[in-house]
Image 1 (cartoon, helix red, strand yellow):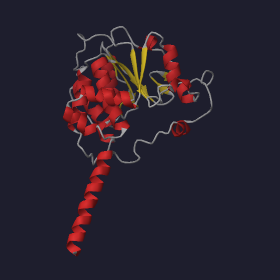
Image 2 (cartoon, rainbow, N blue to C red):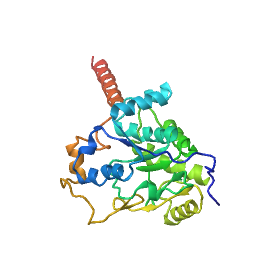
Image 3 (cartoon, rainbow, N blue to C red):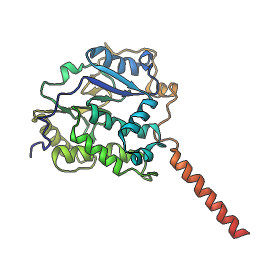
Image 4 (cartoon, rainbow, N blue to C red):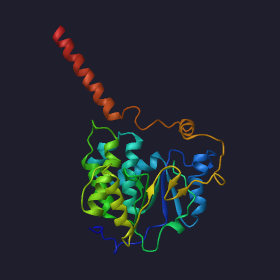
Amino acid sequence: MPVQLDLSTYGSIPKRIHVSWKNKAILEDESPLILNGLANLKALNPDYILEISDDKDVETYLKTHLKKWDYFKIKNKKIVEKIDLWRLLKLYHEGGIYVDIDRFCNIPFGSLIQEDTKCILPTHGDIDFSQDLMISCKHNPLFETAIHYNLKGRYLLNPRGVFHLGPPIYMRAVTEVVFGVRHKRKPGAAVMAHFRDLLENSKHFQTYKEDAPNDTIIFNYDARTFKKGNGMQKAEFYAAQNITPWANGFDKNTLIFTVILGVLLLSLILYVLL
């Protein structure tokens, strides 16, 4: 069965790179993560517009592009959860390239993106389709569907946690829209290999089996050219930037619900005792 998504009438991939970080001056950082990642990305692609969106920019974009109720459901969530939705909206409305800040890069997009390519879908090994690097023309139905599933699965409280609204939903959207058959993450090596074969044989798609961080579609590790900078490792970099791990803490909605529940329980106890 060939690829089901026809992108022949869509435009080319815009030369825009979307990145989200709390500090817009992050390019000045001397950590290996930035020197071999975002700084390299900018230097290797001078004809691309690099847009670094901070937390305020992300908030404004969500408020502008979501219906009032959808925005209300996410306004008190943690920033990582907001970015998961924001990047889907960015790719759908503007197209271009979204890349996580912890991605290394030493391969320019000019030598990567082929003339007729409208969407690139690298895979995270044989687990799922990579969501920390997304490359597409704008108005791609794939991202419209991913946004729909993200919003549909979103509640004021998410008992299943943040993760299920990220990679699992993206995997569902990619397989359903691109291949016409819905698959969960980790469908098996044979299934993922088949998906990659279909994409490689399609005129408007590209793919790559990634083994991050050192073997990806935009980076092949070379000890001779890898910049050591201040020697700071990934965990140290995040700590220095005061970044809280995405799985830590609670969003405001959960805290508010916990307080209300606590007050109600306390009131009930006092009522029984008195």
